[in-house]
Amino acid sequence: MFNCNIHKAPFLNHCLLSIASLGLLLLIMLTAGNYPEWVEHYYSQTVYHLISQLWHFLLSWLPFSLGDVFYVIVIICLLHISWKLLCYGMHKQLKYIGKAVLNLTVGIQLFIIAFYLLWGMNYFRPPAAKLLQLPVGTYTLSELQAITTLIIDSANASRATLTTAQLNTQNAVIYQKAALAIQHIGSEHPALQSFYPTVKPSMFTPLLNYLGTAGYFNPFSSEAQINYEMPLVNRPVTACHEMAHQIGFAREDEANFVGFIAGIQSPDRLLRYSAYYLAMDELMHQVHQRDTLVFHELKKRISIPVSADLKAERLYWLHYQNQLGRLSSLFYDRFLKINNQPEGLRTYNRMINLTIAYYRSGKKLGNGNWKSIKYVNPN
Image 1 (spheres, one colour):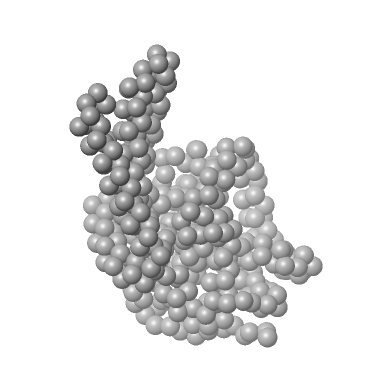
Image 2: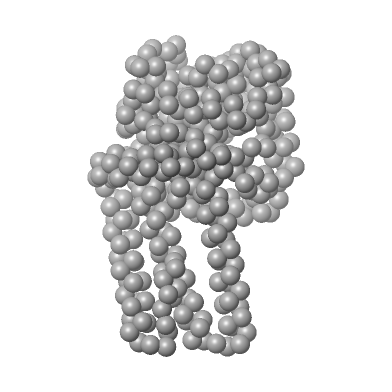
């Protein structure tokens, strides 16, 4: 962290100049976010590709997340600074408080700049619908009902094929199959291209349970982390979701969608079921908001094993639910709104628009080409 001597004017001026310069750089970066095509061409497809390849090449072989270690160091540093500020305040050492505040300001600015430079600018690239040429638009209740029915039937069928052994798949195997699925969908489509995709168990998993978090992406090390204790059905598609962030899909709805299409095209039965299960859950929430009668009608269509998985997942998260989880949700909701996702946590539900557009288009991503799929628009 930048250090300066508050007792000497030249050093104080140097601190203030650094703060002003870093502030200007941050302003330029955020202003560039108003030009999505520029971000796509000069950052997402060039700078970020290089950064992504380098980080993945250097860190993908590590069995643990170096990014988690970085977070621990940051937390320790913040606790140390907070303790020093408290001590200075108790002894009314205002000059040292000023020095610490200047240092902290520079540190926070560097942290934010590093976030956007290493990954965060991807929030401002063109939407996935444009990059993947999907016809996103309004949809009717009948169309939502038809696609939800299709997804429920696919989830039921996928669940029925799972063996006892597959329902006890080890996490290491789940991570490997998810990485292969991400590699597969990116083999032909440039927007989905990945570099050494990997997902790792989070060392913060016990805390993630209380926060109600399935996984997260570390923008400073380009590592995808997953809650390795959550219900098995959630793990495969969550792994794909976090690796979608690695590809450069920063928005949550888009990462959900990329994880979904990677999952349903995987030959791994557990991953396919996990992907359909995610989409079914998202679509059913939307149906419930649009028409409760249709919701209850579709709910009867869900098979007993899938219903049991839904119940087990709900009970798992309820076991850990507390005020800490609500507080983290409020914080993350604000974070999403700042980063070009004005709907906040409701952004996750926008995956539905992409999913409907995917089925509506009659096209399929991956497998070397766009291939037809079976869906009939009811309108």
